[in-house]
Amino acid sequence: MNLILLGAPGAGKGTQAEVICDKLQIPAISTGNILREAVKNGTELGIKAKGYMESGALVPDEVVIGILKDRIAGDDCKNGFILDGFPRTVPQAEALEKMGVVIDKVIEIFVPDEKIEQRLSGRRVCEACGASYHVDYKPSKVDGVCDKCGGKTVQRKDDQPETIKERLRVYHEQTAPLKDYYAKRGKLTVVEGQEEVADTTKLTLKAIEA
Ligand code: ADP
Ligand code: ZN
Picture 1 (spheres, rainbow, N blue to C red):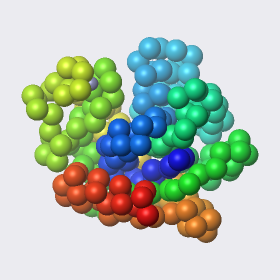
Picture 2 (picture 1 turned 90 degrees about the vertical axis):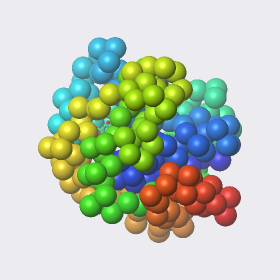
Picture 3 (picture 1 turned 180 degrees about the vertical axis):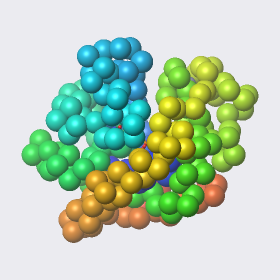
Picture 4 (picture 1 turned 45 degrees about the vertical axis):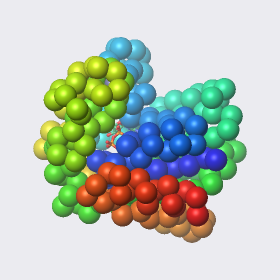
């Protein structure tokens, strides 16, 4: 099964992607995590991507399309995959189609804008493995320490208030049109993000099984 998770930054795509990954035993692919790893390691890709990411802009299509294409060629993707944060523009969706990738379902995790800022400003991520937490909604068991790997949890640079506004603007301008794109193709299911992560998870799994 090939799935796409759509949603504004901070809507909880990453968290849901992890759950589906465990449940269906298919990899969750986050272009954001791949890019952050590259920035951390100072690779050529990281150097290219850093400025865009820190300002809240999107990394150019040709760059992320290349990353995605390489990643889904991996052996572990043979039985399907969950895309978290890709596609983010219509040209990226078209590129997927051109690669011959058939998408089974697109799930939008919908959270109204008012809530997004609150969610993003409380978000913490593990420096080591990328796992995502929230100080109020999904705290790690020990403050500042990742439940999964013991790494340090930190606030992302792009989760600072000024950058959050820009990311939301970019989301509405460039990513939101994908809802129509996939609705027209009969692939879109909207899941309303709930206060409790576990409740959103129930709805997401139901949407996948439907
Ligand atoms: P979010 O929490 O905003 O969903 P991600 O971790 O998915 O964030 O992505 C972080 C940043 O990485 C984005 O703001 C953007 O700069 C870049 N990025 C990730 N995926 C893509 C993509 N598919 N196209 C362009 N830029 C991307
Ligand atoms: Zn971790």
